Image 1 (spheres, rainbow, N blue to C red):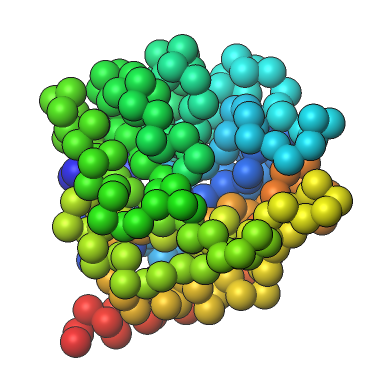
Image 2 (tube, helix red, strand yellow):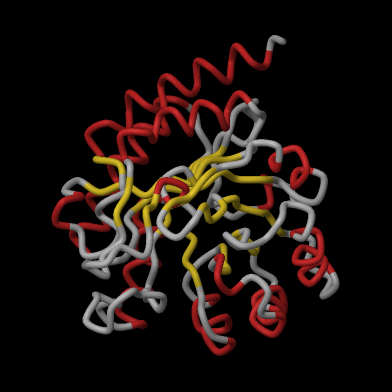
Length: 272
């Protein structure tokens, strides 16, 4: 995959990581615009290639009463408006085969959730839209097994594919990142580290996923040191009141300092 082929992506000539960042879910237009504007301001300053992330629907929920979205087309129209207003590419995840053609009308990158990455029909449907496809490694899968997922995309003639590691299940209620997997997966496609989902603590008795946001910088730094191509960070200006995944999201107020540190680390790594 060539970053330069992602529409509207800036700073692709810089020898740095790219960033997929935004809220877990689109909760409304004002919040999406507010987050996109701030992240764009930071990434422009630091010359980081930036893709706005937001889920138009949250299909994988622990409890039946959990927030799932504001309506598919309404959320997708907000994603399209973010792209138009701020001149940035956008990514959203899809869950069913018909979602691929629908979401492809509004966004630049289609993301396959970790729990669904073995669903051949879904992966192929995403690939056949011609959009960039982001495959999230299943929490239950080895890095080596992701070569087969990437081949499902490239087998359609679509070479625009990337892999995102979001941690591996450890026991029932924790995630770990095995950094040995990064060089392995980079053999198959550009590899992204999903920092915030890697710090989830799922399967809580309350039915609400927990997290360790205090460890975000630790995991992100380790990813940069290990030559990850991109970072995936969910961020919100009020994580405590976010409607999805607030427990592991980064407070938007801390994003600039984090990215500044990571850019400095990347520059150092590039000299070695």
